[in-house]
Image 1 (spheres, rainbow, N blue to C red):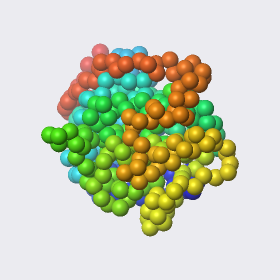
Image 2 (image 1 turned 90 degrees about the vertical axis):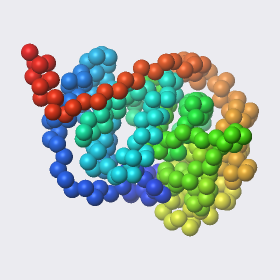
Image 3 (image 1 turned 90 degrees about the horizontal axis):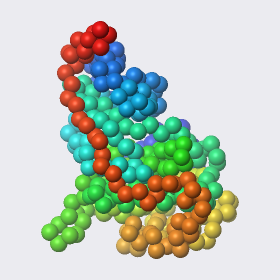
Image 4 (image 1 turned 30 degrees about the horizontal axis):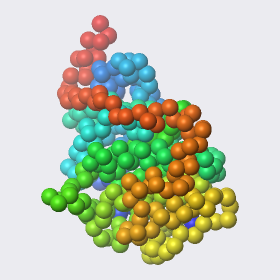
Length: 346
């Protein structure tokens, strides 16, 4: 068992094939003021930085057109690796174009592309991510964890129904709203599910995501069913919520591989019901024995959580079906930014 801080906080996490690798490009990019001018022409007033990586930054902003706050993921093309730009970025855009509005998914409003940047305009969740919430509380009580796990289930089920797998489900990529709803975000590793003529899922061979949330088949480097890999990651999230720590230590790859292929060990504290522990065992099992997503609803603990009154109270849209999305795409010439900014002043 590994502490959240050890694996997710203070050290740089190792990844099989991460899109946020070291930056080899040392060219100077355009001045930030140019970037802000471009966003201002689209009615976006940029605020504070919410997070940043090697070539991507997430900022808050006020959207004057929609009359509310939004989040903007800013991707610097000049710093990003070629593999990300040619392989992962198009898949992320395709995923955003595929999704409509679902209560357990971050809503996307607009994609703006320029010579130097990609801007993803999306819903802002002011309550932060699940990892931070767990750190602040120490652990999440079972009824609350159950509510959020059902939200995660609904969002993942929706994604899979649209033919998309996430491949990087983890606490950092789950955000919370003021209405106590958990939403899935960050589709940098998402890809379309490919089926054969007989309807069999084509196995994935790109080993991406985070070691601490990866199933044995990915850690062993064998082709894997990405839908079942998402289910495994959901189980790691559930365990982490309940116990305030990750079930596996990713500091040593050989040790990690041995752990994920062994029966899961539960600490004595905090106390978690036997029914819930049984479900975690069903999920964190070898791929041939792992419970598929479609069978989770038949689990006794899952059914119990659906009947918790606070879940019904706090998740008003739990039965809400998909709505039509309103994602728009704009290609913008950077040299027009100054001209448009002057026009807006007059």
